[in-house]
Length: 119
Image (cartoon, rainbow, N blue to C red; front, side, top):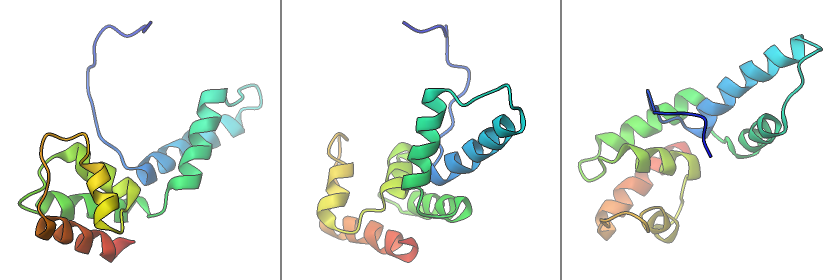
């Protein structure tokens, strides 16, 4: 059951960018003693603190570089790669497992070269 009737806007974020936004929310809640962190929000903060590796600016640059590649034009996949930072072809192929297309070995290597700059 959902309480929302329609999606008004959708924006992709990397885990690092979400960490920055959640840190602001957490600081706002900490300033007001009457408001506590709900379980879901606390779990989200814990998750981003554990898995955010890059700085938000670096993760955005990585996504932009990935989208600049000719063979990678799916924005959702670029954000997933920036979050996971795969280091091998096998790990990168796992990202494409549910996609309707697959990249060749050279294309995978191009993506891994871009990721290696940031990882």
